[in-house]
Image 1 (cartoon, helix red, strand yellow):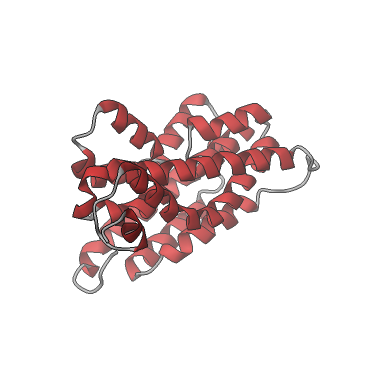
Image 2 (cartoon, helix red, strand yellow):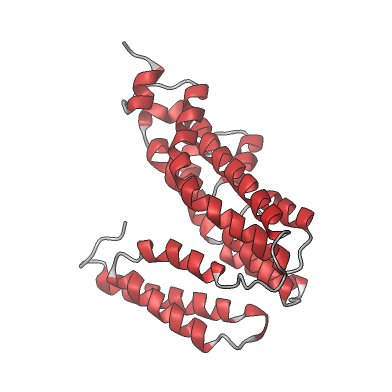
Length: 247
């Protein structure tokens, strides 16, 4: 029998919008195991940075970008100017332009309301969960429903984990140091991605630059480290192009 259950089990048969939505959501669920602790930690760090509880929760809906929210919380904590905060978030989220460029040929026919909604929901995890299925020609008619399922699953998990972090954070002593949580979280995200010599070199250069520029005001060392790592990657990539494959 040709059924939607067959598709959910792994075959490539046409999907209804509802089945596509569920398939996208189910693909994202395993990633919530890593996202949930990240959201809880953000809620706690936001409170320690002086952000009111309601604003900390709303930031997860408005910004909806974990790394950018951590950076914003830290910049607010040190009293950084508004212009710097906007610029920092913009630079940190530039990678999303790459995701957009990747899915644009697949979703370019959609109406503007659909494009705006999916652009808002397009995050690292949602893209990673949805892209293998978006590339399947059998899902051409319901690609937007697949991405919607992945995006909403992540959005829901992020909002709930942020709320949990805010509620837990209000019961913790104000002097409890949670600054270590941010670098540890990013280390856990970055290290599995260092799977080539080029990426290793870029990471080492960025790390060294971050240490050397740590004394710069308003977290400007982040920009220096990011630019140094990007430069190292660009310079080394052509030399390694014929020797190693990049995923």
